[in-house]
Image (cartoon, rainbow, N blue to C red):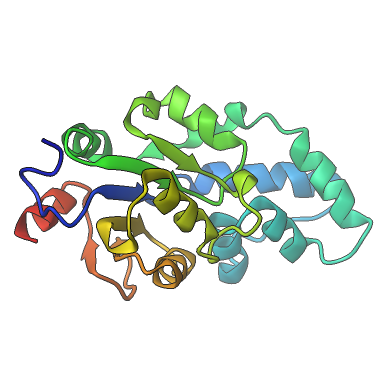
Length: 213
């Protein structure tokens, strides 16, 4: 029976993508360099604020941050739409122990993804053979308000017909923790010092966490 071995209150485990499922910093950086370079702009990897924004926010918000004025922003959006993200997938690295953890969890819990990625998420799940684990994949393209707004998480709760306390959201950014708090979902910080229900530094630790609860 689903949940039999673990704490019965939790029914669904939700994962952020970038920084949690994958180390995607190089892929994301390369994506925005492909947008900026033809427009005569340089991506400053030493700019901590910029790097944080491009790694956590939805694409349209990142481009609004980088290109504050028209018509450059419109050209940037066109440039972004022309990029084939599949070419950047080889730069992605799955986090250690993630697949093994999913193999355990999916036998007992419903699993979902909540990400500010848009169209590239399906390609990632296919390339890394992870799609079979997730019954709901909520991307920025499917909502009006991406994280830190709670809408994506609320859509997942509605999909599984569960209450907020019956889910856990595993994320690594302030956007994730803010969205979880706004949705009333317990938050598990992955490799990050963020307020929440718990912190883990390796994916397998969530199994012990659930057993203890």
